[in-house]
Image (cartoon, rainbow, N blue to C red; front, side, top):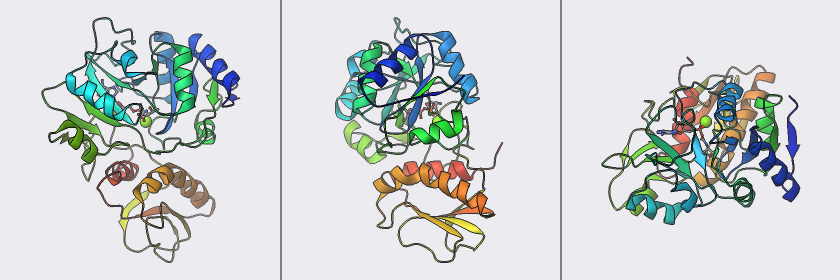
Length: 324
Ligand code: TXA
Ligand code: MG
């Protein structure tokens, strides 16, 4: 199938909604990364996402909504869920809650689990698209399973052109790493994936410690199907480099190590927000250009593990994990 490139205007948004309504697959930008969307209630459309991405069926999808009210018709929300929604939505936070009895999300999208992951993404275009749809839209990151996530429309086409119906070009993503996933289905909140809302912000808003299963230097997979090897470029990745060789590409942070064959600085002034927004584009650039120049590896300078650095390090550790 030919993948259409839709523009960020009322006509592009209406076309995207019409394709989704008809059971097609449309990629779109959110504040975090580009997602590959389908009607959450349409089993065939949801299955087509797994096929297009080559994604294991045990890995459930996040459902996206135009408002917290819409999200909370699908799951059983707790008072804490309402509080966090009030504080962080629209924004890069995903909540895992028990499916509501009236939940219309396909069990294929939740991988047969009794819970569902829901979020209200930020951004004028994605909001307009979700309003136009009027149904929950499931969307994993719009990349072939296991590879680097896309932060612009070109990245989506590089990985999925010909396998999806359309891409709605929403410009570059502002946050740059995926949403934080917080499991609220148990007695205490558990962080399943560090992301755009930091652990520090969550703990402050929850008024209690949040258990972490992922992030920092912990390489265990946490959310189901989130394999430790992920975000993998073609070239091997070496973390916390203190020197760099001429046959290596360098992903720098802060003052740049001398001597690399090619460099991309996440943030020369050491700003974690800037680094997150430039992370996936940088990995893609070093991989492609490094490969072209015959470089053998991507060396990564140390990124601190606090604030947004926790999510950045999580992605880098997975990018460096042995490939399965
Ligand atoms: O920022 C984001 O969250 C992006 C944009 C497109 O919204 N989406 C995204 O989706 O990152 P994906 O599929 O790449 O990651 C979804 C993660 C997976 O690790 C999955 O295991 C977890 O969410 N997940 C989904 N439903 C879950 C559930 N019921 N319980 C636990 N984890 C769940
Ligand atoms: Mg993903």
